[in-house]
Amino acid sequence: SAVVDVAAVDLGASSGRVMVGRVGPGRVALTEAHRFPNVPVRVGGTLHWDILRLWQGVVAGLRAAGPVTSVGVDSWAVDYGLLDATGALLGNPVHYRDARTDGVAERVEEHLGRERLYATTGLQRLPFNTLYQLVAAAGTPQLATADRLLLIPDLITYWLTGRLGAEVTNASTTQLYDLRRRAWATDLMAEAGVPAGLLPPLHPPGTRIGPVRPDLGLPGTPEVVAVGSHDTASAVVGVPAAGERFAYVSCGTWSLVGVELDAPVLTEASRRANFTNEAGVDGTVRYLRNVMGLWLLQESVRTWGDVDLPALLRQAAEQPAFRSVVDPDDPVFLPPGDMPARIADACRRVGEPVPDTPAATVRCVLDSLALAHRRAVRQAQELSGRSVDVVHVVGGGARNELLCQLTADACGLPVVAGPVEATALGNILVQARAAGAVGGDLAALRGLLRATQRLVRYEPRGDQAAWRAAQERMGGGGCASRC
Ligand code: ADP
Ligand code: LRH
Image 1 (cartoon, protein in one colour):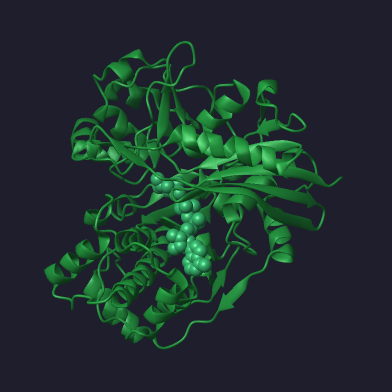
Image 2: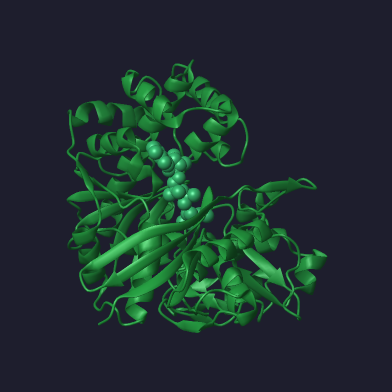
């Protein structure tokens, strides 16, 4: 097979990028064509995504990328744009961290039944699941006028091609998707008052969507191909694991921590531990938990203003371990705002020493995240019956050496860090496979990454007793075994 050039559009909560992959047998080379910040905007009291600015970044990136065979789009989950009957966007997509969903999940669960919701969708309860956002928006003129709902990557794909559709890995994050039937959960939709027909037809990763619109004037008129359009689905494709005994931490704004399975886990214990079953590429199940992730650090840095992140991380490494730990998954940390103050409050509430410098706050965040990774890796194994020998850390967090080492120490397992751009690589490999440039299953694609990408291994240090004690301070999070 020949070598192909394909472009990945990867929109993360903190930045968007267009990456070009040159892929062929034994070969994967990645270059960055364009990167742009993703800055949400609050207006009229509502937090929005600046979708037109992101679109501008996508188009500029695809121009800079030069001629490619195909383009694939992935982004964060759950959020959407609404289109009217002519295909025009009705308003700016609302950000999942907006407060409009406060208290909605509880109401919907009472009405539809939390056990039933989990049995049908397999999804964890996050306050911003699309279902809850739609219930929060019920009765608004915008929703009443809407003809179609498009998830963010599907919206970008629509603007690129004029074709409407919903890619399944991201559809599975809406809580409107029936994981076992692999179809929209039309009964749930009807009972929740979500109009039938709002959600477009589903298609799997690898589907050829269509050529980019000629009026965009992109070099080479590439075709758009559906990838794992949920960024975490593409990131999991990009985990360079051998075999199946691995856990992953897709570590960026969020830490998505879990294992890859062939079938969902829908037990009561799994529901109570708030583990999710999201659809993966090639019919796999991403069995994972959302850990609040580097958002805690990003939002602290934003509060402090102009800081030198590498210098701050070096100072954090010199701080005493476990001085203060908080539970990163505390919902108080979810909205934007003064993060150091909320961390200090959380410490005060549970009687931990209050961090008194940025370095101490950062150490608290990283110790706490490593503990949350430990908790989720243990729970994932216990709840799924899948044992693991290694933890793969991918995404921007793979560049945080302290966090990688602490995660290895906390889990008592080796950490393999990298690739940083696992999401773009997962996106690119699915396109390259659709083009016939590479063949094989996920294991084969991962083998290609092991052979071509720079990975760093961290061996676990120290003894588990200290981590166990710190875990007890933080809370086991429903772990039945000794966490
Ligand atoms: P997302 O896709 O959610 O926007 P990324 O995977 O791009 O997130 O990860 C962004 C995060 O990676 C940043 O918030 C930062 O904490 C971390 N990061 C990026 N570069 C570095 C670096 N040089 N050293 C340490 N951490 C880094
Ligand atoms: C990570 C992510 C995650 C979702 C969240 C909304 O970028 O897609 O998997 O839960 O954003």
